[in-house]
Length: 262
Image: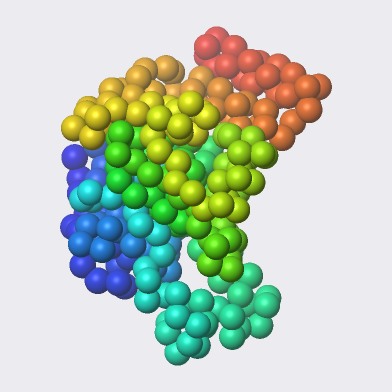
């Protein structure tokens, strides 16, 4: 196993990684602030995604301490332009520059659906705003029974903009997504499982073991077959039946060729 030292400054985003064979664990390491996120966090997450190699098959995302992530660092809610990375600074930029800045932030989340990897969020305690969207960015979510997910952005005059809306609608449907985003209410672990947002909810003391068991199961299939299957499942969300059928045929031809040694 290899491990990067805990990030101790905002410039490092409070993100650390550990690699164990085909499994990469990414941990938000700011437990004293409930893993509140800053633009440096998103830059660090983006850098992790950009450094992935083909040997990584599973990425586990965690939050140190008692909460997964309480969302955006409170200091960044300032509307004063002088606060670096704050809402005021973003609002003061020309619209095109603001969009470019947010696009960079989104890249810290979107890579968790990269081809060839399965991402798993291990969620305990609060997952609010950016924290909830980081969990949503993953393919699978395992929740401790004390987990609470909230998307309160609309109540703050904002919108969820860290890739969370597309995944939320895919998982729970349009109507439930509208209700969650516009009311900003918390969704508990049992409801998350019932609606399909989470794979399973377990007592907090069993979270690590449950994630480990899931990761082991995800690594069981042939790597090539797993990648092709994952790509098919992701494309099924946007493809029509004929296009998806064609994608299945093409993928099977590639698998048959691989099995035949061609």
